[in-house]
Image (tube, rainbow over all chains, first blue to last red; front, side, top):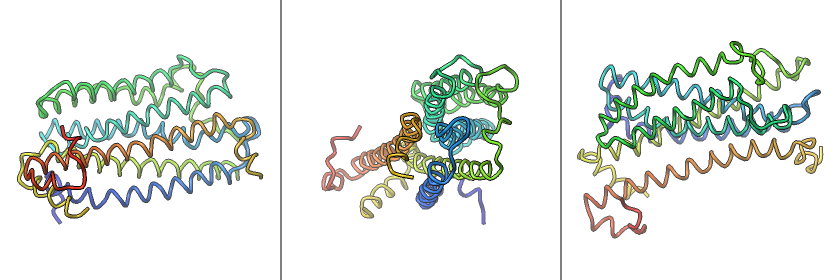
Length: 247
Length: 65
């Protein structure tokens, strides 16, 4: 099988359409299982009470916010190096979902901070660098919007995304490099081993749900982007007419 | 565990359900917006290629850009 065939928007469009529902379904299943484990099955924490349950949505969204940025930067690099259209479209499709996860990580973090630290927000290194990540996503999207010619927008926004990638290791190591209010990655919330295993299971289930959700959304959004950007291609008009018959 | 206990989350209900709710709302709204965007693009493409077919559709063409 020739995988490079799928580097062409015309052949990737139907493939993405076939794959997206499966990833969406997997996301729903994993989220349901993860929420059950996190909110019902896992016992109450000895020191934090039930407030610690925010971890199940907070960690998954925070991991995803950083990971999507790295994937976006990867596609930007590919689009610059090989002048690949589809790679640039993938980066474009990932940015809004990355921004959404960053916003959710900040919101859930604030809601966790209030009961445990006594404040919704502090200008701590971890939180500040995560806020910068949100601005990087928004800046990337704004720059794309500001440039009319898509290929020029691809190049300019790819450079911005790649320069901004330096922020991701800063977020990740911020809890080691600076004295932060935010806890370090090594701190475990509990000492009981069965509890730790249950927590880890819930966190991993939620993280997988976030992964599948992101893949489903990126595939769906890239389809809309392909149609818009390739609208002058003959196959696009035929796909649009065929889609009407299918509904 | 009773339903009331589950909802109150040991007094942290606002924070826990606020976090879960924010994520749930975001992950319902984003796919919905995306589906709308995809349909809008498809409609404008049909309009461009075959105006008669697009008009004959069950959806009004008010959203075309």
